[in-house]
Structure formats: C-alpha cells, structure tokens
Amino acid sequence: MTQWKAYKNEIIAGVALLLLLIAFIYKQGKVSGQTDTSANTELQELKEVISLKKIWGDKKITKKVDKLKTIVSPSKVKWRKKSKKLTASFSSLNNQELNRVMVKIMNLAVEIQRLEVKKLGASYQVEFKCKW
Amino acid sequence: MENTKELILIHSQMKHISSVPSEGINIMLTPQFYTIKREPLPVKYAYQAKRIAPSLFDGLLEDMENHKYFVFKEENTWLFIAYDTEKIKTFLQRKGIEIAQVSKIFFVEQVADRFTAPMLLGEQDALVNINDTMTIVPQMALNPDEKPIQINVNFTPKKGVAFEGKGKSMVSTNEAYTLAAIFALFAIIYFVEGSRYGGESEAQTLEMQTLLENHTSLQSSYARRSISDKYKAIDKKERKKRDVIKALSHMIFKGSTLTTLLVDDKKFQAQFACKDTITAKKLKELAKKEKFNTTKIANSNDVKIEGTL
Image (cartoon, rainbow over all chains, first blue to last red; front, side, top):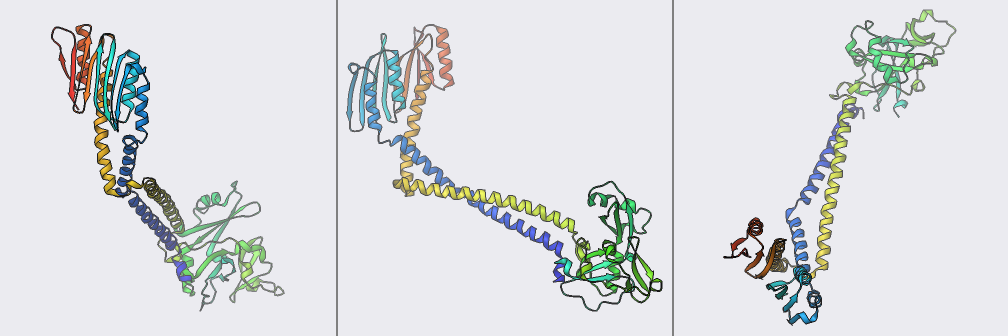
C-alpha cells in the first residue's frame, strides 16, 4: 500500500494524462464520423433532389398555370391547354398588364418553350408556349 | 484516515524501527529536527505568512535550500518552523524508516499544550513544554515526582506536511496537481467537443432517415440520381431563361423601349427603340456588361440584343 503512495504524484499526473488521451481519441472518433464526406454528401444531394422535385415536380402547377388566364381580361386571352402543355396568347396589353403577365410567367415553374413579346403601337402582344 | 495511523516520535536517541505497519506511519519531529521563530505578523492567511518564512530565517540556517517551512497561527503570533528535509530523510532511513512509508510529518510544537508532563526521549533526555516552547532537557533535571507521558495516536494534530515525492517521486505535488488540472481541462474540452460533433453526426443520420421516410420514391440511390439529373438540367436551363429576361427588363429605362422579345429553348433576341444615340450607347454598354451580343439597326437608334441559352 505504501509502495503506490511513493508514486502518488506520478499516478495523479498519469491518470489525468490517460483521461486526456481517452478524451482526445473520443473527440477524433467523433470528428472523423462527422467529416465522413460520403454520408454528408449523400444528405446534401438528397436535400437538393427534394428541393428540385418540389420546384419542378410541383403537383399543383396546373392550378398555378390556370391563374395566368385570370390576371388580365378574358377578352385579351387566347388559351389552349392540352395535358401538360399550354399555348397562350395575350393581346392589347398595356404596360401594367404586360408587367403582370411577365412576372407571373417568370414565377411559374414551367419549361418555357417560346416566349414572344411584340409592341404593336401603344400596346403589347405576348405569345407564350410552355410545358410542365 | 491519515490521522489514525501510528504516530512515531522522531528524536536522535530513538531506537531502530524493525517493522513499519503496511498502511504507513505518521511521524512527529522533536526540536532536534527543526528551528522555530515566533513573529507577530500582520497577515491573515497561512499562505501569506509562508511566503515570507525564508526571509525570517535568513542567516539562521546553514543550508537554506534544503529547508521547508511550516506555519501556523497561535493566539497573537505566527509560529514559523523551518525543517531540513534531507537531514530528516537521512535520519529516518538510518533508523529503518523508508520515506515512502511516512504519510504525514507533524511537529511537537503543534501539540505543545498536550505536554502537561515530560516525555522521555531514550535514557538521557526528555521533552518538556517550557513557556509554550518544546524543549529538550536532561532527564536528571526533571522533577522525580512527575510521571512521564507517552506519545500515542491521540497526539496527532489535524494539519501536517508530507515529504514531497517521498524521495522516489520525480514530480512534486504542486507540479502533479498543476499537470493534472491542465490535462483534465483539456480532457473536458475534448469530451465536450467530441459530444458536440457526435450530436451533429447523429442529427445528420436522423435527418437523412426522416427525409427518406417522407420521400419514399427517393430511397433508391439510382432513382435519386435519375430524378436529380432530370431536374438539374431543367433547373439550369429555365433559370438561365429567367435570368436573361430579368437582365433585359433592366434595360428598359427612360428613352429605351422594348419593341420585340423572343425567348425559346436555344436563343433569345430583343430589340429596343432608343430615342437618341446616347441612349443607344448606354443600352449597348449595359448589354455588354451582361455579355450579350448587340447590333445597331441601320438608319435608326434601335439596338438588337441577342444570345444563346
């Protein structure tokens, strides 16, 4: 019993050093787990796919597209929608109406196949073809 | 527990110790092994008094380097005890006591009030309390009617000192505790950091599981890649179209009017009517910043801007 007491100081420092090493190994283990790039990348990719799917695979997009028809007077709109394709023509639009139509088109998550704007005198004509 | 160990009085005439209890012993030094000094210092704590101890004994001790100091408060004064550790160690070893076997060192001065009668030291000397100072006197000077007392474990004071490193240790107690504190501090830091990283890693795994449970169609990595490729291509192309339209819309300003715009899957074209050459020049500069191709329409200030997608 007295033998270990002779080395009490070394034992105290040694135990603390051992504890430090264990803590360091523990931390390194957790850090390497954290920087496991494959798992991290997989999660980021998954989030990206979900985000893209949410935008470009939006199931409510048809309803959102239909709202485009209502933002100007019906007399100025020619609307032809078939399945997931739309051909729309807007005529005699003033500046404000043109802005509204363009902002709406820009915010729709559809594939723009053709967008044509023509100034005819003081008014504008818009031809819009898209699919989703 | 330390204070219940066998207490051995250390004096120059003591006999050789043949066996020491396995749990170790405490020793009590007689004045033969230390020098005392009483000073009425205006300090409150023992550690403050201990700091000035070496200066008090300056010139009194032969070998200052080997001396350690023990200080305790008396009624109106501080009692300073200087003891030579090397001398004590050598003496103890000569008497059969290994340094490692000594738990605590005490001084008879600490229990002076217990010496109501003399204590015999061998055959010639005795230890007596004279005016609160422990003194060694010849036994022949003692009053024959006084019955000598014996040292026992009840003489053990509360506070004592220990041999630093007990002779074999390479690290002093202070150094050991300092090192241990530093190591423990770093260990705590590492544990906290580790647990934080671990928490993040677990949260990441949990998040992955939750996302996959909510999006069953994405559980296969092949399906994920296929869907990703499809939507990435659409996203890239459609964002480009919208960026171009947005850039062209910024080119509509006072004096510059959009007359035509065409955007399809592969290209874009826009024509602006400008009121004068300055406006046309400004428009061309704006288009150049966006890296669009510009063409000035002949015989007018109109500018045609085009590019590929």
